[in-house]
Image 1 (tube, rainbow, N blue to C red):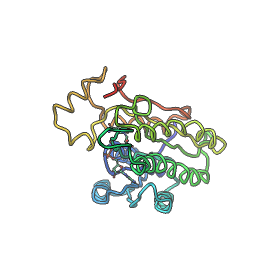
Image 2 (cartoon, helix red, strand yellow):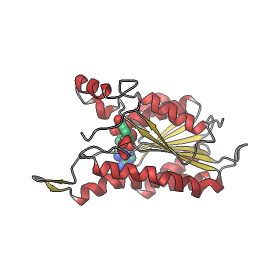
Image 3 (cartoon, rainbow, N blue to C red):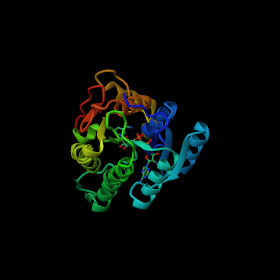
Length: 256
Ligand code: NAD
């Protein structure tokens, strides 16, 4: 099992929700964590709380130079071994609606730009840094963990932009793994179901309970720590490569 202790981990969207839980988890395992996020206040608080081995670089994942600066900051702390991409947004709107008209292409592009291009920015720039690492005893140099969604497979009404972006993250998982195999860098994707993050925390408790009850088992929302455990397991397990893992309690989303 590969060990993240004493190595760097870069977490995009690492200030909140699934990313925050991953930041905490990898830090607890002894990693040097670099949070790449646009939420300065939350990230600064988290870094202050974690103390040693934690840093924050204000990063919009769609900005190449900012992602490079975050990668550089991570490498400065220790060799970059894991990049977990959690930065993402949703913007529900239907393809066409008789009152609203066709979905504006700018809205579609914004979601794809942040979720897909942002993830690929982190992937390609992290891979370039990881390729310089000394390989471990397995010949491994690093791991990329991306975040899709069950909406990549069962996108609901109004999720066309989100599903397209997440479906593309699933689609690039295998070719990225194949491209980087010669360098000993793995690429995996997690497709979460319904998770209890700040996104859902804004909903009333009864709505959250109803959402959780749709999950066959366990009939509740996922805990961010369960996502973080999965990311940590992927990082530690050399045979996991080029695949997407649904983390969803067997939910299959209905049209709405
Ligand atoms: P969240 O809103 O709590 O966290 C997302 C983080 O991404 C935030 O800190 C935000 O500031 C950051 N971010 C947004 N745009 C950014 C940008 N351009 N550059 C850098 N950072 C940016 O949401 P979450 O629920 O933790 O979601 C994390 C990921 O998991 C997202 O990709 C989301 O699509 C995916 N996901 C979440 C769920 C769920 O139920 N919560 C389900 C499936 C997939």
